[in-house]
Image (cartoon, rainbow, N blue to C red; front, side, top):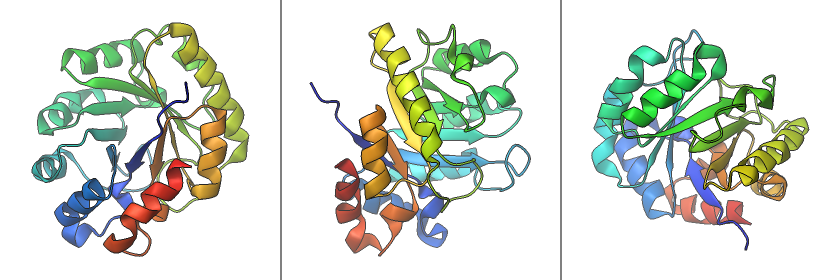
Length: 219
């Protein structure tokens, strides 16, 4: 049975001057998740938003808030993001020295836990975690900025993670983020992805194009 492809628009590409309206628009256009990129200017070379903005956006959509923490350290902020309305909290192995403990903390807060695999990170970081995680995010760009090109060498990694998920028999999301367009979406889905994060390709053309842009990524 084919996996249902879900789309998670990244609000990093939204108009920050009217962020609440943008979230409402992508929700209405068919988004499955709302992807929130949190960057600290330390772990990655950019600064975006924090828990207060997540809390402010929460009333604008009932869709799951898929929150990607590109921050180090992440542990001191897990509770803040959980209380602000994040539904899924994804963290990087490089920023969390005891990854299993961090994943358990997220789960203990009643949220779904994700682990992020950068282009330079080996899938072996997932060893011992596959029975705990709810989502694995494979980055197909180096994190920190939107608008980058898809790194095709990461398709093998997507395939490897899909095999690991299938072995568990659990419903673990395999999310792919970076350079997702209608063309690269097909490659990611073929490799095993079932959640696609996209910013530039969804927000291009303004709100009247959002539904069309989201539909184009589902394949």
